[in-house]
Length: 267
Length: 197
Image (cartoon, rainbow over the protein chains, first blue to last red):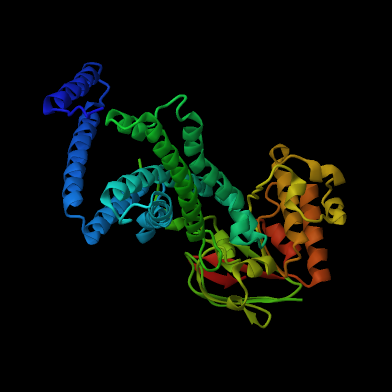
């Protein structure tokens, strides 16, 4: 099997479809054409840039440059988590909670996968590290964002119940226990669903890509299984860390509920 | 027995003040709505950040953890909140005499929270707080949703309770007749100042 190379014309034809969709949106006054075109443009630019950067890194694989790219990816993921919060933490913690928990989970799981499971040589080899980290960050990001949003939303909704417990002398973690559980569960449901549907309902993107690029299907399956399991672990640990750090930061040193540490909901 | 002493206490909307609540005695607190009465109680219970000293007898607040302090300095808010499905879920043990005192049947522990009337919620919230045996009681209009007969029962219960357990009480009420019935000491908030009446 050989890889059929895509020409700019091929991509242009696909882009025409999106342009047609934008035109349809305009004619039906859905008002979404602007967002659609900007998002499509972002995809084109971001992925092209990533391709160029990776091409450069494949040649020039200096550990420091790879670390810089990994850090950049982490920060963008941290920002995305923050941007998806209805009520976000004010100040450093706004980005801090998500970034820190994704760092803990995604980086550890990636490191483990590279050194123990895949045993790439060297372990920071760009070909394995960046795609793995990207898959993990992208998915952990959703789990963390959902769990955090659920946590702060419910803490706000149930503030009177939390305070009622505090007023009876309950400890902070007793007062928020149920809310924390619900938040964690909500963060894990997407990946559980994805694992349950994998291969039956949906053909995962990575596996599709490998098959299109000419890899033997069963090898692609094995990689996809590995990735799904890693994502489940990464998302689970990431969401746990985020819910733990976030719920702790909802209380101060006197174990008072401090909803003033959250910003008002965005429009 | 315990008394509560506040020194140079800062509460929102109020000038710093001193206040002493003697053990076993009841102090009433009144003032126009929105003047900061509830916020004062929330600060004293250490539920809101604030400045100033608070002493439980000879012990300063900072020597207690937050939950310990709130356990000893019990605050009853005007609107009670319940986190579980049934009344009984909110108690470890329930003192049946307290239920009888407030005209509630023993079966009330099996009641669903969503089916309680506001008066039942208010009385059960008081029992929930007293079950904790706080040494100071901060009450935010505890009889606001009650009929005349239950108002009398709550007043009687608090009076016998504070005398028996030597509990210091601070009681917010708008009703001047009630102030005279229940309290030995009276404080009022007037244009941002806490004054003795």
